[in-house]
Length: 411
Image (tube, rainbow, N blue to C red; front, side, top):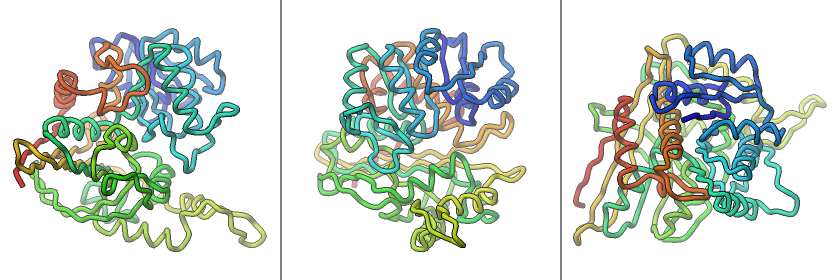
């Protein structure tokens, strides 16, 4: 199997490549990126004869199409909507099966902060999403949309929990990447960058659709705060979470739920700091005038805070998942929970976020490449990974020492 990774010179793309080169079913790993330097850095880290690099501009449709024809399946790790959708568009037009890690439900594109997404003439956002799906179906493309940590692993486990119950009322997913505890106190907001921080801030300020009382309800991101104790897998930590847009497909694929939300996990104190920044206007994108100059508050904040959020030598991250699915089983109200606590691989220099996101994406792409996902068009992870596919996915994670604990209790 030949697998092509878009954004392959970046941290997440090269991590996907790292996982793929370990797979005996994968003969070639193509890394596609705009930056020659980033590609060379990735090649030097991976040190594998399987790796082939491609310097490519995703704006050039003919180049994209020609490159896709050289591979069996692709993985999209590009971080913004403008470039991600260019790859999505090219893939469905050219009959190219692929998986995407972006926290986006491409059938209903996010209406907020579209990040330069260029719509075809005469199409609205939702019409474009429908066109992508319909074109993929017509061209027999499987597009696994959102296969990483959240979306991805979280969707898959919550979907499995729902299948085990006779009826389901509520799904709450709690996921996040945080600094290891000893590092948290050394960084503002008790946070450390594990992926693009500009994207993190975006998730804190937009409107988010959730399900409340069985209805789609728009709420502000960073609300719905909750404190919980993570007391499984040998840990005992108090953590906080708040609503973010991490699993947008569930609103549509599991619309029968009375309650659904995805919440991002942080150390205590983080959300108070975020709320203060929001109230001060420091997350705004509207320019303000200072000394006859127009400046954007969020860009100023990013310039000042990002250097203070980068990991220092020896500092690592942790990824946490605590998902709950509540409903009825055999006439009894039942809760099925999924727990994960994953730490960085210091030997291979792969962050916890890289492991849970990049490895999940690599496994998902291989499943698509093997034909294990039969559905065509835009397929959310909860509809793509089930039955034998779920067992395969969980077992593959376990091979990488990413272990998910499932518990069932009667309420």
